[in-house]
Length: 294
Image (cartoon, rainbow, N blue to C red; front, side):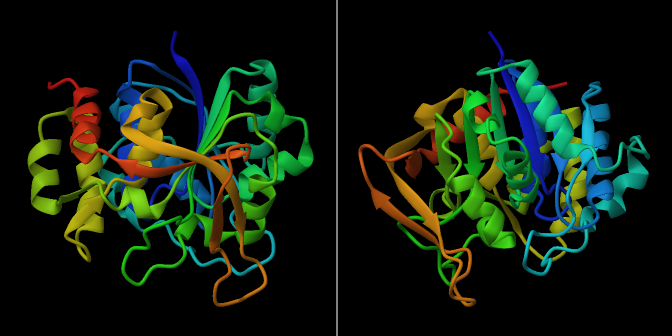
């Protein structure tokens, strides 16, 4: 049976969110119940999600969510890739102020069946868990692209989603979800393709050609895509792509310089499953194998 998924995303900044959504839209084992967007220009982010859904021939519920973190200043004010929206049909208007309520009623309508996949800062999810503290126990699983755990990438001690709203991250990490899986920057940075490889491999599928138009905005300042979010999504359906170890994760809130740093300790009884390794070749076989050529 297909796995029911809710996606919470800051699509429109790093291109990997759009790549992740495209994967979910074609993944045969995924029943995508809805999408919520988070951080600055949440409605433009919803329009980008709508463009991909339309390109895939799908109508998926989409709700713009919180644009401001709980306590810190917003570091992500713009959805730069919205510039490419003129090329693709999309919805223009969305329900306002209903993202958390949508997540709540969808999870309650399918108790113990929904995987909540978070690939952006965690403001929406923290608000959901605080609004209805029973929700974490009603999830099938919570899967997050969040944090850094063992092998820090050069110059990176913190990860964007964890530090984008660190207080929300703390709420979510303490929520007590039955299956709580974290895929961090130290693992996701091992799955990447150059801009040239992306252009070659994305050109053979209509939905990936749509993603490529948004990616060209990303490529103005970068020459590759790191598949952070698609890897997290792939573990929902193929957890064997990563090696996981159980432990405990907490987030730094005290030090302003390190706010959002994820403290990780192995513990066989711990509440979190942390990815510590990945097979890049196997991941890309899985990812591109989900797309049928036109």
